[in-house]
Image: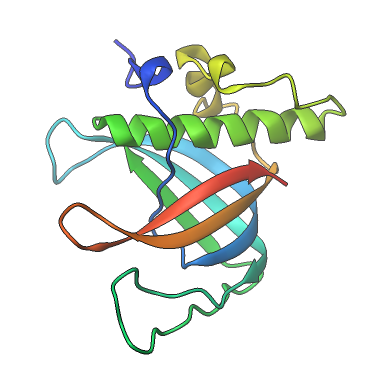
Length: 165
């Protein structure tokens, strides 16, 4: 059974790891899956990206504070890792949204119109191809709109909305 089983039936929301709030343009270095050593049965999808351009200036917390600290931009050339837990429905949702942005960016790279590519096109075989050793998305440019939200537990979480650049 694929680690992406069930991806077609989840909604898309976004999520991130190791990315500060802001508007970022990034280039994909690689997309992989990784079995967690610390958490038995947990599989992550990890996108390693290189920052091309970054604008900070967004709140670093979603909590009610009198004087919020604003994010600083990432440096051009900095490498970031964005990961999602594929054993969680929200993780599959985040992966699917990312997959859509990547598929549309790949179409643009190849001189094709990305507008016919919709979320319904992001299936298990598409996601498996993106994490394959061939790395078909390497070099593709994406825009990452990152901002802070609160989790149900009241903790800060960086949500990322991915788009083809």
